[in-house]
Image (cartoon, rainbow, N blue to C red; front, side, top):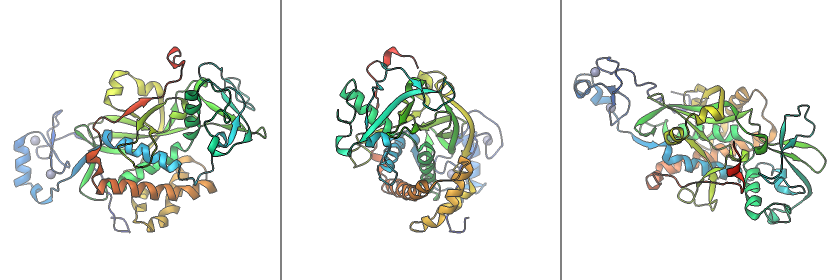
Length: 383
Ligand SMILES: [Zn+2]
Ligand SMILES: [Zn+2]
């Protein structure tokens, strides 16, 4: 129990042996009420229920599939970005003077880099523009089409903050699912045993990277694919899943429709869930795209557990949260990050908490509305 009275209930970690007879078996089944015990046979379950005392401690939990809620989380990430606490991206506040048209223009070496292989699509910026003309021909006159121009606007909008967003999502999931004994995350028929942040490389071609040259000649690199963060989930069966809201800016432009999940008129939010079906349809897709270097459980982290407080006290936990982030990022947070993170955390806690309390997930589609934003020549290119 943490000092503030909240306890994080860590789920079972591995389905390995029958709770009663300790037999190791491939086909163990859960107590369908609490999901906290596994048995090899109805006999073992009955004996634990009657003689083992499970009857007294078994509490009914609701289970929510990650597949059902991830588009909601993706929508909230988009909303976090639009809370306008962060400094606007220079690509969205200046005119684009060159033609970084995907599939047509070739990537170039990033100015100032010593490595000639260090290439990206260069976006050259000059005069400031008002938000009203964003995504109009005045903002980017030489875009091949309106579709290309709109997609570029989205790619710039979704540039950066992959650590922050994924972390805030994990943190809010603990608050909504694991501080009380009544609701749990699952994937298909198995409870989630762990989740948190994974860190490493995402495979991106130079063609799919962006770098910006500001009016004063300063170069701002887009999100770094060698320093990427995403969410991992592990089920009690040991199945691994990846949830990533941060790859759209690299042209991995899968998205979900936001209409069933939030009232705000977002239309779409970037999200890739490497679920069982995607892993089966494109064999080895995750190992081809991701090289994981390290992972940090958020669910099982003691500091995260003690940082869970009711708002408005949540702000008291910020020093602990900042320290956690700085440990993982191996750098100090800057003033901007310290400014927006508390707002993002509070926003995410509120919205995820409300959605679970109001059981909104019961109205969400079993198969999320998905799409891919393909460039005109993309089918000709190989990733
Ligand atoms: Zn047994
Ligand atoms: Zn039970």
